Length: 506
Image (cartoon, rainbow, N blue to C red; front, top):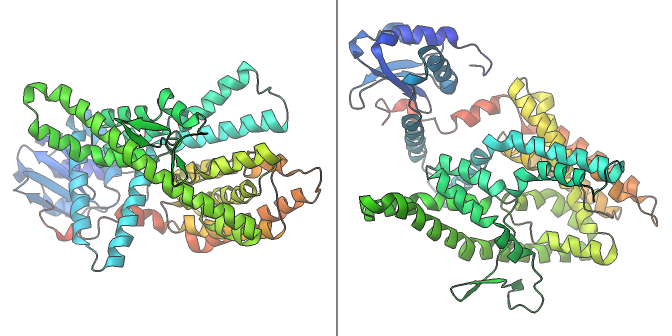
């Protein structure tokens, strides 16, 4: 059933089939079924409901006290229409979230892998699903912010219409940067709802990570500090030396926090006395989980990121063409897990010391590739909602902000992300082969002024050629092999395959 289909008639017929509004106490839904709590289940006309176009079956679950109408992937659309006709008083959001989580878990359990590779693949799919699911509610905001940042860059650095020292620039920059700077808070709240931990507590934990004093520890000079495997120990926690990385703009640490907060919170709920639970449970959850992120996740991510950054830098020095191929194809994978932050100081140091950065030039084509992947989806899909989201992601990607494209479209549907990376690898290889260089920070298409060189007039043409190759290859790969509208339903039903076989759907 199409997302754009009008479900009002079906909703009316289902309501009438279960005995009318006067026979309904409340209605919830899981990942495939409407679940009615009826005053008298005998009034439900099962044969009539089952015969409806858009209904796959109907039954009364005595164990749960629910009359269940099997809809399939369009269940949320039908549910919304049912509630619109009945009124908000018939809805129960908490019960619905619980039902969705339980049936999703049951479907995943029924599809257990049978070998090690299967478990690895499933774990990666669950991780990516959690990341994209946590990002989806804020993708529109990120896309809007990315486009705003792109326009600000255009009017400031390209057209010189706004002075970077003016308060106008400061205010608009804050508007564009706010969603990204406080991204851990937004993602933390969203991830907590998805992972069924306390959104307010997880939001507070994210606030710790982006607190100005914590951010200042990362930004402070590290010269003379003790190091561990090249990582400066810029803080200590109860005497234990730790490294505080940059948590603003990151998502993986707070998703880990949202995951950990649930078992910690549940355990505290069991052991704490009821009279003190409302205060001590959030207190201890905040302290334990925030400490785990700062002491464990931060240093681990920094160590991995540092090793990868060193390897990337060596590769660029050894062979620029091969480096472009590898970076163009895989760099955005590092972005997903927040492992790219140790690359940023290398780029900053290059520009500060020499005025240019080959590494930043090669990274540039990965942004163009992800934006183009979203653009190909926009060109191919017939779904209005996906068209809007993918076009916004493409524009944001071309403005140098890839998160809306990656989390809103490319990672979620089909093989868009990897097909886009093929274009990034091709563009990076061509750019490296032609010895591209970059003389600024701003990347992607909007950063083209950073490729003008006083000593090498051909550098801008290298950028144009490599960018064109990136766009053409990414677009073709995604359009023909990376995406179809059928993928939209696959995403919705990926965790529903065995649900219909369970008659009780417990």
